Amino acid sequence: MSIPDQLRDVIHRILWSDDSQEQGRIFTVIDAARDDTIYPEIVAADAEKTCLLVGEQAHQLAPVAPYLIELDEENPFTRWVLDHGWGKSWGIFVASTATFLELRHHFRKFLKVADEDGNTLFFRYYDPRVFRIFMPTCTEGQLQTVFGPVDRYFVEGEDDGTIIQYFLRGNNLVRNDIVLSEVTGE
Image (cartoon, rainbow, N blue to C red):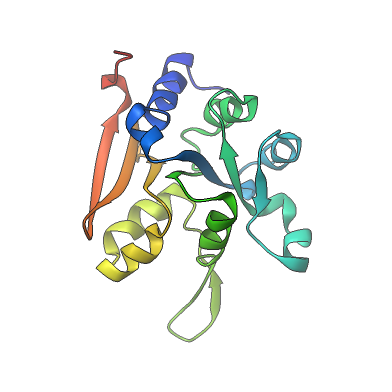
């Protein structure tokens, strides 16, 4: 089921606004495990993309792995992601002037964390529900690490009528909740 064209167009305008363009290109970190339709679309997408897992794990878990994908305003894959994934916690969006390889390296660093007992766990930071909870808990140093080459993060809000933009002002995290119904094309 697709979102209404008007909602997709508003999200599109926010991601590719003049302000965002100064921040670089738009990427998504998308979780193929969220829906069976995601992986075939990634494989077919005419876009720069990479699995964030490496080695044998990337091969074995490809249909359910997280992927970094560069989005283009006019690419059909971009439209598909917004149409079918918005409101379903498929992933996060990123504005960055970094190269694709720099971002791949950056996002791979966060895939695994250790719990209190030293056990290695997957960290699904690219799930908007996790991201919204995690970001406000970060220390100044952690924020610098999480942002690294990223200028802005965009995630769907608690409801699909809001997009949340995260950026740093100095060393402080700024959360900007944008109510999509209040955004005009002007």
